Image 1 (spheres, rainbow, N blue to C red):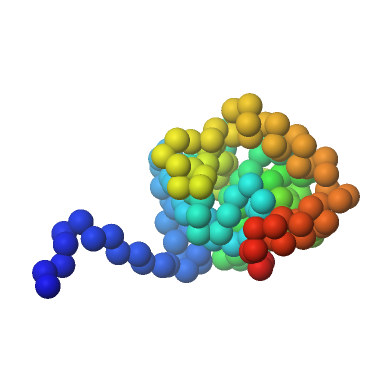
Image 2 (cartoon, rainbow, N blue to C red; image 1 turned 45 degrees about the horizontal axis):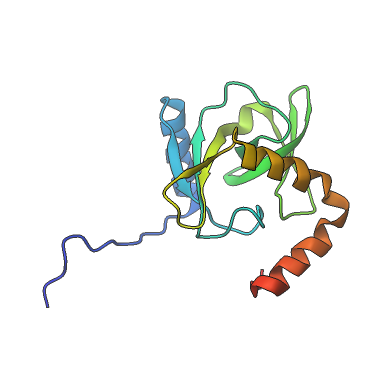
Length: 158
């Protein structure tokens, strides 16, 4: 059987190798679409299902979702929950703990997401994302229970 020329190949590259290349492209002024790995932005963004569109940040605000280096070669795509001068506090929507980084360690900002296999973008400046962000960030005290219910109802383990 002859292989099809249009057959897609999936290649996984470690974040510590891939992300610096993505940062270089962002620094050159390109926007980059990155497939998401991990569960920290649940329930809105899912592991290996959704993609983020990233660009170079011009300014940073609380509630922005950013690509940041929180330790040497350890990158996260999390939401900003606090800014104090040069120190940025981050938390994934599906996390309870926070991380911090310096302003210079924020390398990209999400401007949109491809979710659930769709070809249309959910813009971070769009009404749906803004309402979701407003509601979800204010539910932090009960988020643990909501995430548990989400996992039970969807059958997702992590």
